[in-house]
Image (cartoon, rainbow, N blue to C red; front, side):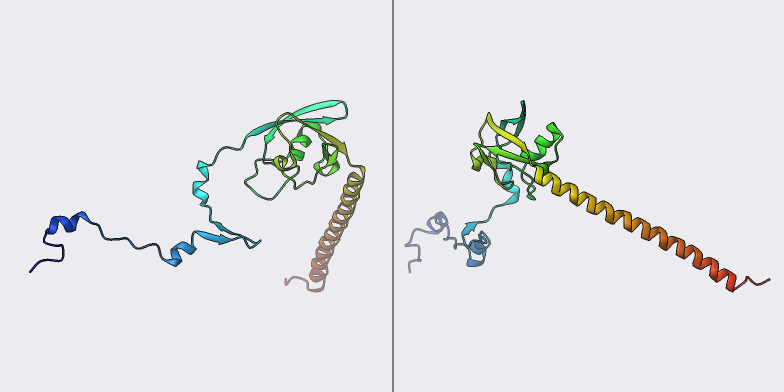
Length: 184
């Protein structure tokens, strides 16, 4: 009788490897995720981020009054602070360090339009050597100062309440001691 290999022997059988099965549906499901908008995307590996191209740093000229400040910042930064940790910085924070203005007291104008604080620089069209105009926002400044006064009043009231309660506790121990004299 002939063998199944057609009489060629074991050498021919060893030359062909068995067909590998495709990954199971569970393994494939781990590679994809559904984003909040309903889009199905391939999952990113956070460890593989080192292979990504570095984000370019751009130079932005910020005009404040008659003075120009040059700021070097990531092109993927925002006009103001975001809560995502992968951003390398925000423009308002950098401008605040140069000018001394509070970030909430400033408006940043690019191409004669005030930009949202959450807008990314590259999406707004800010490129290397672009000019951004800084304008003080008096309404935001007044609002922040009123809020500071309000919190100062609350802190002062809390301090006085804690001082009064401390005095009451001290007097209460004296009353207790006077009512119950120590044994002789």
